[in-house]
Image (tube, one colour):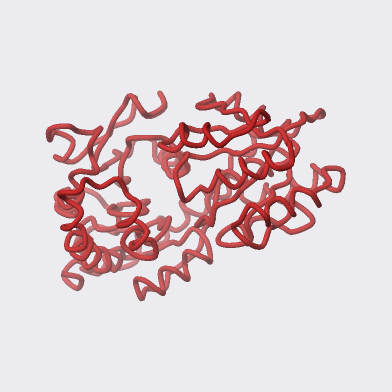
Length: 373
C-alpha cells in the first residue's frame, strides 16, 4: 500500500502538527504534502521527512507572508497529483480536505474543524484580522468564494473522521455532512507523567492568539494574586504583557522536556478557549494534573467534572475567578486523572487510524471530485 499524508501548512508547530507527527510515525516513508513549509519553524523530527510543499511556497515573500496568498490556496491544494498512491490521508482545519483524488485512490480525511474563518468566525475575522485598509473591502468577496469552495471540498473525502462529537455537529451544521467516525486526538502518555511534588503556580499552554482567551487567565490571576505561567508564542504576547500583574510569568517557547515538567508540577491547568477538542488538557491530565476549563466545545468530552477537573460556565473573568476560588488541589487524585487520560493514548489513536485505512483500502472509492465541482 502506498500512502500520502496531506496537511494544510507547516509553518509553526502546534496540536495539529503533533497529530501529523503521530500519523507519520505509523507510515514513516509516506511523503507529506502541504501548501507551505518553513523548516525554521518546525522541529527537527520533520527535517528528515519527505515534505512536498505546493507551488505557493516558491512565490515572493513565502512562507512568512503565506496569508497574503489566501485566494490561491484552493488551486494550490488541487494541484497535487496523487495518481500513484493507494491512499491519501489528510488532516486539516482548512484546505487539505480539498485535494483531488479519483477512483483509484482512497481519500480519508481527519477533520480538525470546519474552517472557522469561513464559517462560525467569519464576521469576527473580518472585524479583527489585521487586514490592510485597501484590501479589506475585497475580503467579503474573497471569503465568499473560499466559503463556496470549502463547502464543496468537504464532500470530496471518501471517508470523514471528526476529532470530537462537537466537530461532528459542526460538520453537519456547516457542511451538511455526517462524519463516518469520531477519533479523538492523541496524547503521548509515555512522555507526560505525574510528579510527586507540586509547585505553587497555575499553567496556560497555547499559541497566544485571540480565540485562545489567555487574557481571562491573566486577569483572573491578577485579581486573585495567583502565580500563573504562560507558555507559548503568538501575536498577542506583547499585548498580554501590558495587562499582566507581577504574579504572571511569560515563559515563551519551551522544549518538550521543559513542558512536561511544567505540566507535572502545576497546581492546575487553565483552559479558557472553546476548542474543537484540545490536546493540551490531555497532556495536563496525563501528567496527573486537573484542568480548569471553560465548559464548552471539546473540553466537555475530555474533562470529567469533579474527577479530572472542573468547569467555569461563562467565558468571562468573573466566571473563571469563581472557579479558581472554589478549586481545591487536594480534592483530585493524580492517579485517577492519569488513568482517564490513558483512554486517549497515542498508541490507541494510531491503532484506530491504521484500522480505518486498512478497512477503507478494500472499499470502492467514489469520484467525489466530480460530484463536488
